[in-house]
Image (cartoon, rainbow, N blue to C red; front, top):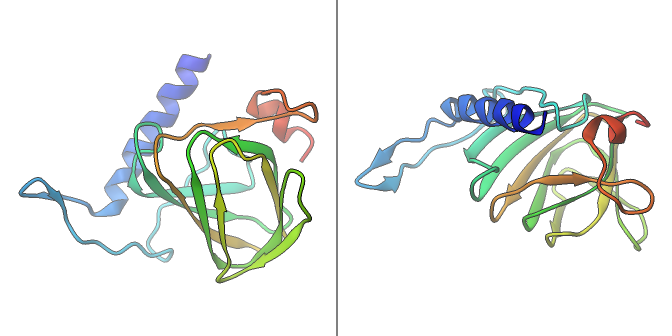
Length: 160
């Protein structure tokens, strides 16, 4: 199942690369602009059903990447950590974000969050949120239970 899951995710992310409008000129990346208005959002099986993403640049399974996440109002993103350092740029909406061991914070449009790889965190979106998610390397999301043990996505989302 893990192999099938990774294959589906890879195919979905590769197909989203068409959205980016990227092309190579003399071996370098070409200038492009991404817009939430033209983004093609999809739901991926390893993310909560209330969250949809559009690939903006790169491939998160292989290298640094940028995704735009659209998160429904009242959506809970359960505790997890990322294999890569992650930056979150809040475009619109607001919600509560908490890093393990810290006080919950209300984040609104314009907020920025930096999360080192392995940092456990979770988020509840109060109104529909748009968030750019930037990773500095290949990334895998690890969903965890209350004891900090990795759990499958379906188990993580069953309580949300």
